[in-house]
Image 1 (spheres, rainbow, N blue to C red):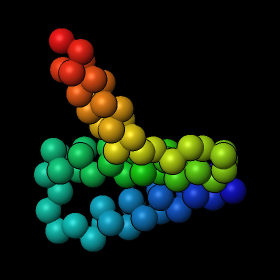
Image 2: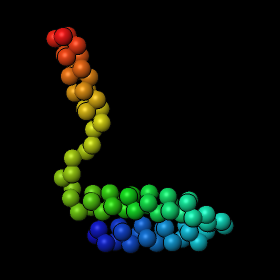
Image 3: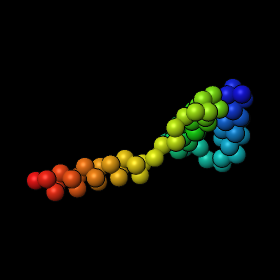
Image 4: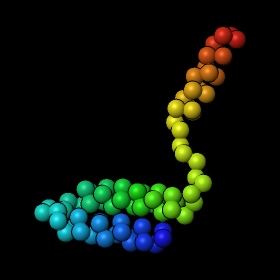
Length: 74
């Protein structure tokens, strides 16, 4: 199934490259990097269903609590 997901991303990338009237190298490289990242994350989600959902707010909450407690102790 992951191979099918990756194949789908490759097909979409090829079709979109053919539809671009102008293809500057910088934009193409950025596009392929983002497309590869999206394909990798999609394949990981297919392969491992138990991946934890990233929560940046939890990190910020812990950081704020540590800073706040450190400020109160000092």
